[in-house]
Length: 346
Image 1 (cartoon, rainbow, N blue to C red):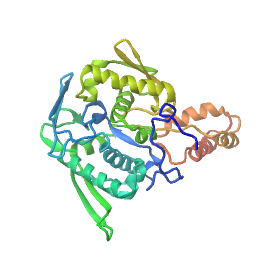
Image 2 (cartoon, rainbow, N blue to C red; image 1 turned 30 degrees about the horizontal axis):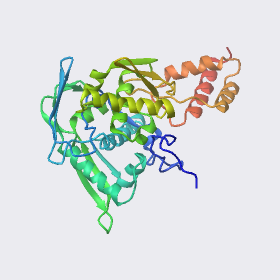
Image 3 (cartoon, helix red, strand yellow; image 1 turned 45 degrees about the horizontal axis):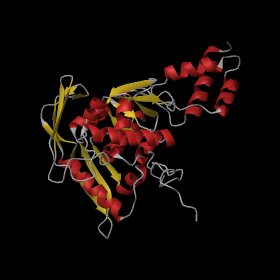
Image 4 (tube, rainbow, N blue to C red; image 1 turned 90 degrees about the vertical axis):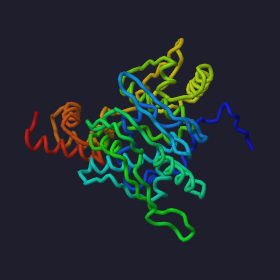
């Protein structure tokens, strides 16, 4: 048997459900999405142990104070629950369906969609996540959906087990999102996340990716000082320890290129994030995300609109379309057919 050294092993978690229906419930026809307020501000704990300290973050006139319950602050991995709910509601909005502040889903679906284990430990971890999300309270003047919140509220208002199996394992869950999160969804103040986000092992990796996604976006690079990065991550480590943790991630990324969408390196006292160019027109503020078209789609489009420049038509289509379609190839070919019907030959 060949041994795999720690150095050669990928820092990413394995894809636990590599089947085509990995993202279940048609949820990730629209890919995972996170709310921008939580991506910008250090709401979630980086610790894997109960974090019971009260934290207050202030920057550019905005503040957020997060108070844990006795079970600790909601963690970066607990955030998966919110990402799942946000993504489900955004998929509904994009399909012109009516959505609600109350989200009902199967626990098994969430565990699969977020690449978690589906044994008893996975279900217990999910239940603990609900408790920390409900117990974590926030006071802030950060706006979501144009509404400024000064009251105290939780990340979720409640979590309810609607149905469970005979052995007591939760089967169907109902969550009521807080006004703060729901306002962000209605205003489409969300950003698309890479699916490998759920494969990142370390909470700090996830937090650094979120910050890059928010601040670098589709730009070529983004620089941030180590001190400000630590503040935005909400790390309680010493400056020296934080630098060591960041350097470990940088070394691993240089070896494995495991960080989604962005590479990173240290330049003096600044961390530099560089866009890998893996995002295809991922637009800010929760707007449409259009995948690349297949060669077959271009060929069909040429037949549908003979004599027209197919790349010109593609640009017209991308500018015209309001929401990301489930089947981009078919949508583009249909657009070309309609274009030719109304305008004829070029």
